[in-house]
Length: 225
Image (tube, rainbow, N blue to C red):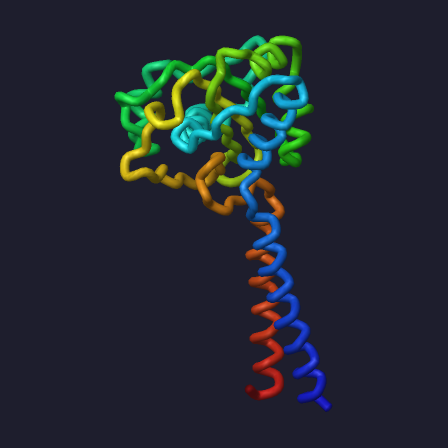
């Protein structure tokens, strides 16, 4: 009887771990890509052209977020700050593997920070589209390419969202050394062809799996396996 119970719980644990793995795959889609899709959809609905997704510019957007070092209070409001423009060439580009000579002027920036993670569509409408100035930036005809990024602080709250716009051309601006941007964790950037979690739900999954494994080991020891 004890062995039958043990086998039942063994099967349950295996199912639990499999379900957890499936959930992990589900939530690791790139929210920066989703944010960019919402942005371009909004532009085309407004009779503006869709913008080219630049992985190099997007990687720099992630570095731009990291420069805030988790200080949500420096984003917007009376104490708003922004990284020095010199950091683009001195820090951001090298960290991404972007050729410094290919850097192109930034024509617009959308930046937001929240203590809790929200879906990319909500981040776009509720965090980044704060006022008429944000709408002017979004629909500006000066932009030709765009890059988006999202990152938490050490993988958790607060969560930063950033969109950088430029007027460069797809084959000569923000050129990546070797054609591939350097992946930097934590955080996600658009066009990286990399699955990435933005939500804190993913950080809970390894904990759940660890609990399941612990229960599994305990049961195996009880039935003498």
